[in-house]
Image (tube, rainbow over all chains, first blue to last red; front, side, top):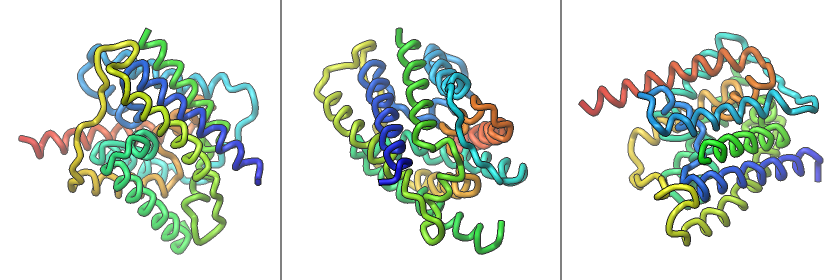
Length: 135
Length: 139
């Protein structure tokens, strides 16, 4: 088996552990789009744990000591369009890859299974069309 | 205490996303590129995360309450409505355009990727727009 598959599995286990820990200790679903978007609403007591989760995410990137590959070929226009669609879609659809794809499916939520199938599907179609159109 | 826990969870998720290669949009796009140079790594990430989370959530269901607060706050909606379907479809398009979803792009910002900051700004604008749309519909 390819090394990157093992790394994927290991990274996935770590993500799964984080999701379980947040639910078991704090009773919260680890859905990053929800954590992020609710920070835009009126501040409340819940803003603190949400903020510290996001700080943890950023700090992990800052403190990680080994080289990391990030290949991003997209133009600024594409990055802005994609960012806007991701923000719009995750709030309307109530979740993203972490909330629906991991926590939701692990809870056997039908909504999350449907959402994950849909966003994977439109993602695959988008990549296909992008290549056909040479974007 | 809950704030420290969520910080540690954020940190763990961040390292998980880095180790798995999911902070690299190219790797995510290669997973979605089923008819081209397909890279199945994301499926392994999902498998690892789901295996742990399924056991963990099942176990949590037998607990009367979380360790550090009064009650579990889990989504109660069960119906598959237009919002869910439309939103997920829009999210998938954005995801397929660049290869970033909300968590990895935040980690990428920490790694010093400038375009991740631009993506996040646009994402927040999209989130705000959606919140306004939902409010408008409710009135």
